[in-house]
Length: 48
Image 1 (cartoon, rainbow, N blue to C red):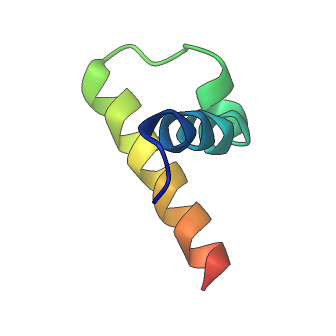
Image 2: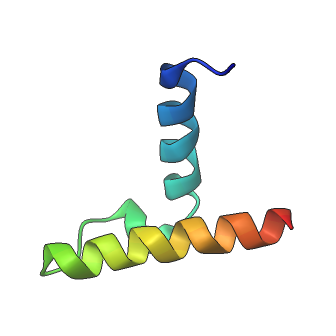
Image 3: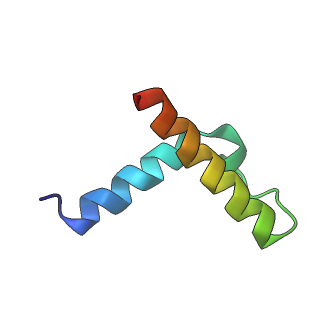
């Protein structure tokens, strides 16, 4: 079982690979959340 801290650190590491998410340029929270979700989806698809 992976400790929660590792899960959080790994998530931030994945987000840092997405250049758009590295800077806070979004004007609304909803668009920021959408790009976080897209980043996660693209990461998981690369694993498959």
